[in-house]
Image 1 (cartoon, rainbow, N blue to C red):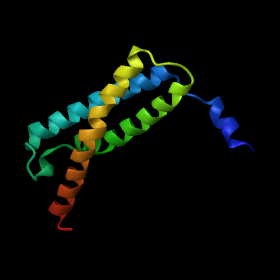
Image 2: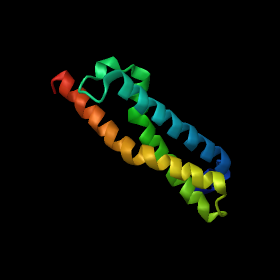
Image 3: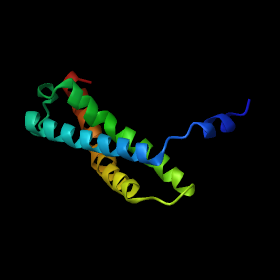
Image 4: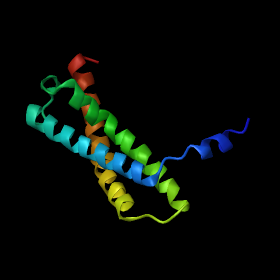
Length: 114
């Protein structure tokens, strides 16, 4: 069984992937703003709701993966405006979001006494 033949048959359209990247980037921005509003970047994560904590921690990895997939599909055809916007929007969660999620996990470990 040839796995490359099977995976090439199930491609995601670039516009759907671009919209998903824009939504994930917006979700990360909302989660970062909610974290700042509830805890003010102090070492107290207990004030931030669980949904927003998970969004802060998981969204950078999702945006990174979506950006890699989208950039890989560039070989098929050239990008339109929405694809470039999606890559630019995913840049913030991947860079600052990774730093914020590493800091969040470190703070959670410090709060738990590990």
